[in-house]
Length: 105
Image (cartoon, rainbow, N blue to C red):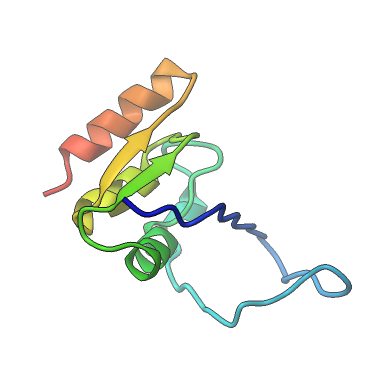
């Protein structure tokens, strides 16, 4: 198992902020499904998860999502053949994540 350190992703709905302290990474993620926010109020698109997890991990690596919400990171891990640990204090969201995971082939 490898430790990759902390990754923090920020999301904006409108124009990307500029000025001191803001840095663009030059990566464009084109998915829009997370903008619908069907399963969770902070739901994100699966495309960014697939992109970063595929670039930063290898098959069978372990990924921790300490705020699993509706399970987007876990779904990406399952699709990319990564192991994962998901944690959430809200049982409703754990149930949603488990349901979504059961639907992934």
